[in-house]
Each structure stands twice: as C-alpha cells, then as structure tokens.
Image 1 (tube, rainbow over the protein chains, first blue to last red):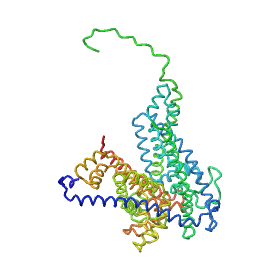
Image 2: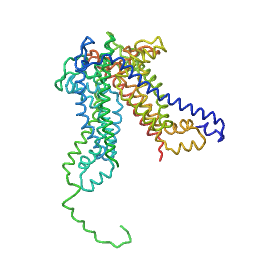
Image 3: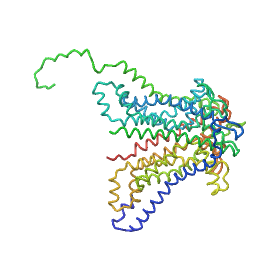
Image 4: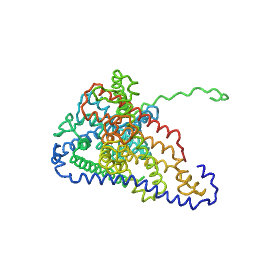
Length: 295
Length: 316
C-alpha cells in the first residue's frame, strides 16, 4: 500500500508499470493453467496406462491373482451397495436437519452450537470417521466388518455436506412463499413440507448427489472399518463382507507387478466414469431447476 | 400509568377464547419438531462419539505408554518386535508433506484466484473455474496413483535423480495439486466480495490493474484468503490415500524430503491394511494418533473461522 500512496500522481514510470501489469496478466494465466495442465496430465497418464486393460470382463470377473483374468465385479457391486445405503441414511437425516435449522429452530444458543458443530465436522479428516465407525458400528454395535457398518460410517462422513448444501437450497426459497402459506393458516410443518421442500428439492438433490460422489471415491475410512482386500463373492445381506472400487484400486496399485498397475489405472477409469455420470445428473438437475423457477 | 390521571376502575380481563389458532395441530407439530430435533442431534452425537471413542482408546494406550513418551519420543516402531511409541517422526512426516503442499498450493491458488477474479473475461472464467473445480472432485486415491506413476518418475526424477520410489516430495506435490482448487475457489469468493468502488478508487489514483489487484483487492480480501489457506492446510494434514501410496511406510525423522516418510494418517491406514489385533498396544496407538490428528485439524479449522470473524472487512 505504501508505495502506491507515496507515488506522485504523475506518470512516473507509467510505461514500465503498465508493461509490468500486462506481463502479470500472462504470469497469472500461466499459474492458473498449472492446475488445468495437472488435470490433463492426470487424465492422459491414467487413460494411457489403463486403456489396454479395459475390457468387458474387467467389469464382470472376480478379482484374481492373474492379472489377465482379474475383474472388479464384486467391487463394483459393493460400491453400489455402500453408496445406496449411505444415501438412504444420510439423505433423510441431512435434509430433516436442514429443515429443522432453517424452518423450526429458534436462533438461540442451541442452534448456534449445532451450526458450529456441523461446520467443524465438515473439516474432520475422513480417516478419523473410520476410527469412529470402528469404535461404534464395528465393535460396539457388533456389526463386524459388514457392508452396513461401512455405509453407516460413510453416512456420518457425508452428513455435514448434505446438511450444508440442503440449507443453502432451503435458504434460496423466497420468504414470500412461506408467508403466503402462513397467511392461509398453514402450520410450520405444512409450510416446510408442502411448499419449501418441493421448491428446494432440485438444489437439495444436487447436493446429495455430490456428496454421494464423495462417498463413492472415499477409501480411507473403509480401510479402517474393514472393507476386505480380496473378495470373490457379492454381498448378499447387510452383514456380509464387501469391497469397494477405490479399495480394489488401492490393492492393485500396491502390488509391484506392472500388470496390476495397468489394472489399477483401468479401475480408476471406471471410477471416474461413474463420478462423471453422477455429476452429469447433478448438473442436469440444477439446470432444470433454474429453468423452471424464476423469482 | 400516568400519575396525573384520575384513578380508573380496573378493566375486566376478557375470558380466554376457547379456540386458539396458535394451538391448532399442536400435538402433531410438536412430534414433528421432536423428530427433526433428533435428526439435528445426530451431528452433535457424531462429534461426541468421535471424542469419546478417541479419548477412551487413547486413555487405554496412555496407561501402557506414558503420554510424554508418546508426544516427545523420537522413534516410532509400533509394529516392530520391540515397539517404541514416539510420535514425532509421524508428526514430522505430516509437517513435511503439508509444508510442500502449501508451498505449491498457496502461490498457485492465490494467483489463480487473482486471475479469475480480476483479469479473466467472463467467458474464460466460465470455462476455467469449473475445470479447476473438476480437480477438486477427483478422489484422493487417484491422486495417489498419479503421484506414484507420473509425478515421481516423469517429473521429479528428472530434477532430483536421487529420489526413491517413495518420498515425502512426491506425496507433497500431489497433495499440493489437490488443494489448489480449494485455495483458488475460496480466495476468489473473497476477492469478488470486495466492492467495485474500491477498485475504481485505485484506478482513479492512476494505479494499473496489477497494482489494484495486489494492493487494493488482495489486502481487502486478506481474511478470506488466509482462511482458505488454513482450511487447505487442514485438508493437507488429514489427507490419507495420497500419502499412503506415495510417501512410503517408514516412520523417520529426516531433513531430506526425497526420503520416504510416514504421516499420522499414513500410519493409520497402512496398519489397518495389514493385520492388527484389536485391543493390543499397536491397535490402541492408532487411536492415540487419531486423537492427535483430530485435535490438530480441529484447531486449524477453529483458527480459520476465527480469522474470518476477527479480520473480516464488511462492505456495504
């Protein structure tokens, strides 16, 4: 600040300063492009390593000690189990918490405590959630290393994200809508359930899908709560053993043989495609919502 | 009651109405309110659960290993025959990787934010920002794989030929790239919240765009920028899969980032990937390390909220 203040308001070195400013535009653009280049390098290197290993039987085979025969069918199905169960638990609890905080809670100390708590939970490392799940679900509730223990752990992990994005969606609903409903004699719950939630739903779903995609890519907590490394069967109940896509990728990428590195890259391609699909749905929902509703 | 006025007889209070609008649906509403409150309580219970589980198991651990030996010991050989539980090597590994990551993410993230907020045309911004945010949506296991198969052999080995297959540097670079979007996105939000009039004031004084960016906008948004950097730091400390794959599993106090190191998070997942007997001392040590990790990230998060609350400049 000081040299700007002390600079005389003449054109002292103006040419030089302008040239420096123009150069800075390029420097800043290059700095921004580092992130983009890293993204491209990541995608290109993974696709070039994994593409030769992509095949139909990669999706339909069981894992195997022989790289040529190995597949990730159980991991794919296990991931579906985990994210479906996670969504079934986290979606209602998260949305109802958001409704409580936005529509019901008095702005007092209690709701402040809950808010601060949610903000801090969002910053807890995922591996710590794994230790929580290990203590509560695996050991205390005696669910063992089961798919439900993994999904409940994951649900607690994504809950803060679901709550925060649902609150934003609910807050975007104009208060005139609520007041009109209150004016006609609706109760608080009727206002929330019949008017606020339907209007906020696309925004809420977007947030839920994004948090589900986080659950799909998360590995560390599931290692702690005991997703198995080598599974050659599909989960058939909430209490069966399971593995998930990122877990299988982790296993393969830790093996020294090059073949398994290729398999890991192919697994990553499958994982990224699934994430892309989920995000496309989220973007579609968002654009549909913004087209339909204009305030 | 006015003192001057003549005493008046008290007005009879009308009997309360038998039908109260406010009390309609009261039972159903209060049930619903209770259910909603219980949902909100889940998140509070999660925090309490984390604290209870970590403290309880860590307490067991500290009965076997004195807390001072844990905090100040310089040797971590939890899974060896003669185990020693000095956490400093794990802390040092975490610090190295966090420092390397911050060295990459803070300059690149802040510069990206300045570019997106001050220089980029709306059209470029519309493309660049979502692309950068794609980077934030990539699972960390993928970054770990990228660190091992690309960053180390293609990039770092050319600059540092002595780098081993596992190193703090490779992991730190990957973590740094991963948190660039976090710094960029939050810093840009803070910069865009700076009112136009401040920039115009700068231009009216004859400042160039570069001078307005760094001497007007960045100082005005500094609380948000610092908060974003602290949040990114907390993410780097808690990052697990990248370090598990790329940093190695050798817990050592070393001043050389080209050597393998183990972090707190790395120790936790690498131990669970093998076999560990529930209730044994190495098992309990996982919770002690988890507690330390939880406390460090919690302090960082609280500090970042404090910076925003304390140093935020509010504009009309």
